[in-house]
Image 1 (cartoon, rainbow, N blue to C red):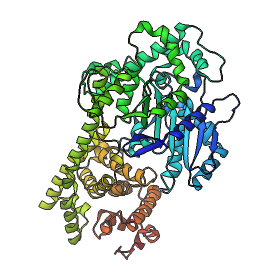
Image 2 (cartoon, rainbow, N blue to C red):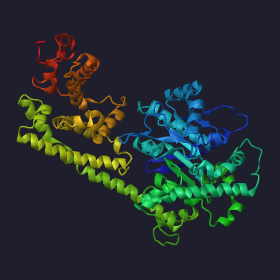
Image 3 (cartoon, rainbow, N blue to C red):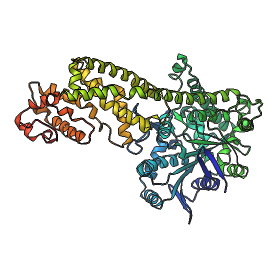
Image 4 (tube, rainbow, N blue to C red):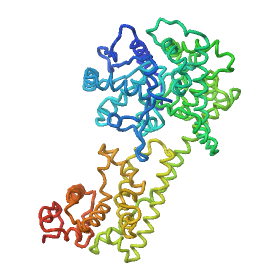
Length: 614
């Protein structure tokens, strides 16, 4: 029983791939009016859900120029950049199709639940736009079941000739969650469908609907209306794909020319980007396997380019027909199973004429020749490799700074403040001793290190998995809880609130917002629920407001809410009891409040609170 190696530690049975391909095409059939087909085999360890494609312009582009929309985070909470707080974008029509036909389908949900409870592996598959629906179904399953239950069998998504579905954050999020290996996309070298969404609808609008009717398996049309129809469509898609790939390649190579950014103000560039693992069928019974999304984008563009534009009218329609050829192509490939795994891109020969004694490099070179890759294309693949190496290098560089981030000095400073009977927030705010000054210097040093990390995150200059690493989440949480109170003390000591307003609205640095979101995402908590490090900022604002002529009454609800949160945070040991020390800003303010309020306050019941007289 043959298996296809699609990653360093991942193999897929070729019979399963062929069966999934057959069912993906079958889902288009005239007799099937269902939104999905379920295939169960007695004694099998898996079940297969296949989804049909859709063949009208509105099923691809819901709005101009590229039909994308922000992802629904209620349905897909992981599809975002955590620290930067950007939502992924996804094709709006594909998302709406999934929501209307699949996620709201009770029968579908019941069948998925049944397969999960039977410990079956669930395979989601689709051909053409059916693959995009399969992609969203897989992510939905990962969010709903797999993320919360490690005993659930991991799903598998197999697509064939599937268009690109989401943007770079979509890809980034799947790699961060370590979900990308569950998505395997098969692409024929000359199949234009995976690249269609790299073109704005305005550039292909005249030819698009006739082309879709030709591609529709239910259609009786054996060809497009005219050769020029296919030729114009193919040429326009390829030109736009080339523009996207060229722009991406310039960024990969670190081009800082301002013309590059100016160009994007005049030329609409597609937001879509590959994700998962791509298996390219060369047409010569060979398979080239790649999982680097930047390299995949280059390969999609360069492998399907024509040698010269004059040949386009003759070959465009034949190449459109490749969209139907996955079953036969994979059967031929699996008979021989000649697959090249370009995992690291380290051994990439830059010329088709390269000579070497290494059999591995020779094999790679033959496969790249079969894909028609020029030296320019190979250089672009190398640039993608170098970007990945640079991200890893950046990660290694900040890993070396962990010793500087361990914050031992500030922990000792906090303990010494506690021994002297004053919380370290108030001690730091007063700034009486040399130790307070040195603590401020250490605070600024740590701010520099963390700001550097956050800037790398904003530029996506760290590996996608970085924000999901437990060690860094824990380190960021420890840093935020220990150091942010000092930032707040410094903010209100210098009366910055008089100039910029409340700390939490205008003064809070991004480094704390990011690290808070890391923890909330890792623990699947509501946004803003881990605000314990901002406790002192809330106290300062309430102290200012209640000291006004209006007094406590207008802000009583906010005060009670803060007290309840403080009690919970103290009991959960995420907020230290030094906030309740006799002379702390909080307790001094609390003692000034009306007797009726203090009698009803939940703070007085906290163990260790020494103010017994109310």
